[in-house]
Amino acid sequence: MTGQRPAAERATDRWADVRRRLRARGLRWTPQRRVLLEVLAGVDGHVTGAELVERTRRIDPTTTPSTVYRTLDVLEGLGLVSHSHGLEGRQEFHVNPRADHGHLVCPGCGGSWELAPDEVAELVAGLRDGRGFEVAVDHLTIEGRCADCARAGMARA
Image (tube, rainbow, N blue to C red):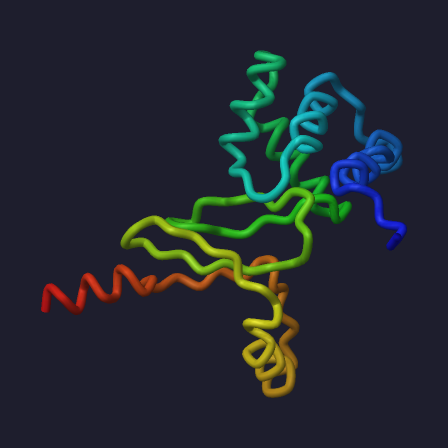
């Protein structure tokens, strides 16, 4: 036995102390923030801010988009969520990720794929060694054409 608890249990632990941490920053614990945290605790992977607004409004229709986005900013500062940008700059939040990762996005088909840190290790090392630049892999988005769209483009030529 490895001693690891189920992912759902670890995700719950992640949110257990948020109320205290928000108050330590001088922020109030509001019903809207509580609902957002309930929604986030049930997310595993990627979600847009608009989707979070919609999900919280299903539970509490008084929740405003500004409350959701301000709280997401605070939660990102606490290291509980992170964001990246998808197609057309659409902001996506990573909730309960298994590991930091970037993304590949294809505007041709709208596809998005996770990019593991080891897949960009050479690029990251080159930027660090050559420029002294530390890459935040979880914010890395590379836009291009996927293999299917590239093949389709070649077939049309």
